[in-house]
Length: 314
Image (tube, rainbow, N blue to C red; front, side, top):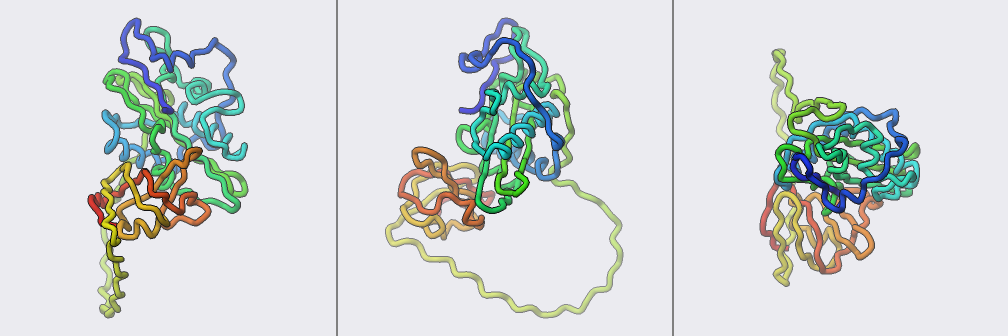
């Protein structure tokens, strides 16, 4: 699990043992910051997508507030990933994990017992590498980074010290063959702004303008394309239930695209762990992005879309 939490803010409260183990003697701050610490439009969309996902899947889900300190930590680590072959993982070349990077980038403050707020945090990381340039959209990254155990799941029942601060970043190598997306979500007192707070724009901004009268063109009849026939169900009665969000399901063996042909539009991604690493299939993505092509008849994680399809006969 790639997240840790601090108990409710109270005098004398201690960390969980796992978090306490991260506490190290004071040392000089490590490197932090890049030329792209500030959020761009795609990174902003990415955070909004993760927020929407958390609102559906994580309880309690607190509105995320962008922290400049966490942005800097995420940006530095994303850049480090692409500069070093996109190895993945949560430890950088200086031996730091995400809480220490957050501290080095200015995620300030401690509990009354002296524990840094940065120790109540989680990180999600997706590093991609290919033999040709990659395009990893905010939507694809958001689907990928909410894998089981990701820091995107970070939560706590504490209302006084919620997971409310967030930083995110995307980095790409000069040749476009390595891309990394990173998100860090951390606890901070409910009544205080996040370190280096940044205001996100609305998820769906609208602009009101005065319409200009236009001439109504003469309508031209257009041909109606023939609908693509939906394949009939399999003869073995196999089925799958897919709701919006993550679904742990059993899928028949065979090529992913063929097995889920009747579930088109119901899922955004399929993940399966092969014993060593997670493999991924995203419908419509280039072949070099998809590492999962054939199902073995075992369990898989399916990211359901807003179609909320329910039971599907395969």
